[in-house]
Amino acid sequence: MSEASDIIKAHYAASDRGDLDGMVEAFADDVEWTEMAGFPYAGTYVGVPAIREGVFGRLGGEWKDFTATAEEIIDGDEGRVVALGHYAGTFAATGKSMRVRFVHVWRVRDGKVVRFEQFTDTLLVRASME
Image (cartoon, rainbow, N blue to C red):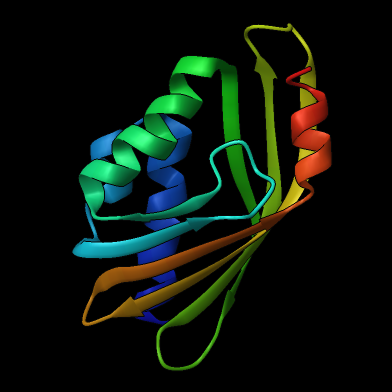
């Protein structure tokens, strides 16, 4: 495994522990984080503060026991890493649970995460919110 895949594994391990600081530890200052169109938090967030507030803060505040579990990490070339896994959680406002597959595409450069892009079934996520 490469340094890039080790960095991404560390991100998911921090997520499993509920360690937000650990999750963003290797993020570049100008990291770009893209949530898929149709996802409740869709858009591209630039910089750690925007990601903390616009993505992680909302997930933590609106969902009970939200998890993003990476089941497979695929080590690519030139700092590309792909994670296959699933989201799970219960939307607090409705009490409805979901479990949805995801693909996360990461880009690491010089030991820092510079880009993230999410692919998931947004309809299944939104169904748990209604």
